[in-house]
Length: 304
View 1: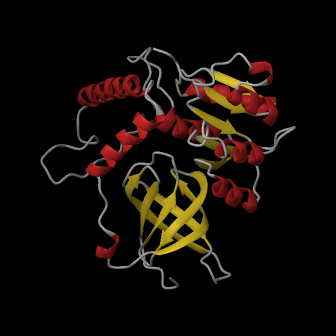
View 2: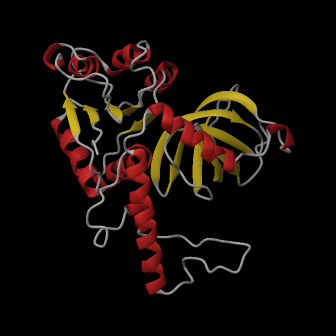
């Protein structure tokens, strides 16, 4: 089975090393191709220059793109990718130390799959890579008995309406069996999707979303209003920055391609249109799909 590559566009050798270490820490097996400037990245993707003999029918699993790179900056690279039919749907994740909001807004306008600000701490850096890995990368099949995926290390209690015990109530032996089965399922799923085309993956996502169809918007007690608001939020003490797509007094939908799970608690900070003061509020994820996460606030917002 052919291993799909990741294209890392990064000119900082320290960040390059950190990224490779983070891949290794999370037991991810994709080959990583390094482009150290925007021109080299475009040459690789379009099969020009030093990569004129590359088979351009084979595209990376996704592109991890820094904005502040030499020759051609990250935003221009993204613009060219989205204007070409061959790379229009290629997943591109902006991974940058830039704190300028205009870069975030412009990245989403141009069609980035996600925008992640680089943490300074390696643990947070590795967690960001793990979140990407859950969505786009292939977990290593080797050493299943010795390696537990990071997301399985601390299983949370599951509340259920039936008589099945939660993970926190089962014995250590049963818990180990559960993790082993989950590992096997994850590996088998990785095998099945590793050589899927982008269209096949989208079709699969569509079928899965049908099984978790959200409640129609007009059935909500509080109707959501379309909005493009930058939101800083944290989950498990890890920070993210994305856009709120729509918002109501009781909740919001946040654009993200990362695979967060339902019932996760989060804290958010954002400024509503027409207001000067920032809003700080907590909530939990109540639904997920390929476009983002639906969040239910812990209290009603009076300003909406």
